[in-house]
Image (cartoon, rainbow, N blue to C red; front, top):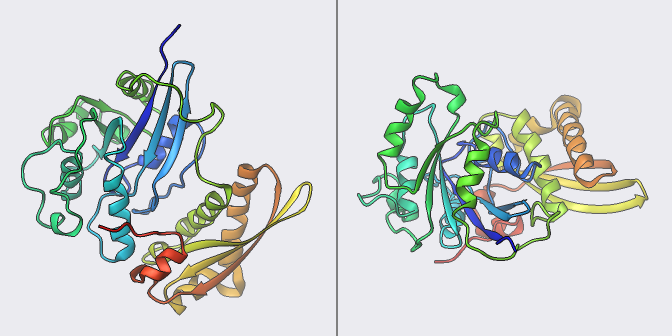
Length: 319
């Protein structure tokens, strides 16, 4: 009988490095929203890839960054706490730009670097105190398609010098370049064992969470400056009206009255645009026609309010 291997792969990296794009590409289905805005991912998300010979459970994490409020502290804590759970650790970097303090902090977070963490990052989220783990570590240089072919190894070199890893791979998550090689490198390092999830399962997140994320994704797409970071979305109503129609009511929460006006737009035009785009994604997700009703409410300073964070689903880890 052929041995089956399975395990959890924690994907870490600074904001906007392409972690969610990679997981969506490998799983073959959208399980995490993506945008060009940094800090899009806020939660620990699972993406499940099942093959006849192995099952890889990817853990998508928020980007490692310098937090400026309680929401930021929550996001970095989520990333840090995903390290000990991993059978394989995957550190993702953007080879189209040189290494940053956030890259160095991420490398140290997985225990691959022994020098002091960057001073700007260490006090805020204890980047100099790596959780104990013996999991194999892979360094993955993403966005290789943005670098000239004869320059890509040179661009990757400063990242390779940041720490000791078990493998170094260059990919393009967006273009699908070298993803088979990456999957093989992960699979050969998984422990032997049965699958954790059914073969047809691609994520552990409930539909209501995914729907809220699809609404937030469109807010990220259509708005700029501080607004994308100030938005939380809650699902207030989910009613099956009849066999092929679901009524969904969602609230977009912002921090300021001025942000509410921008999201609604002149004559409600912006909110209508967000709703139409989100509805298309939701219908694909749940396989039914959707009537989506959106409201916008102001929750002043919610990103700094621990009670508001809990209300919006951001349960801040203690310790």
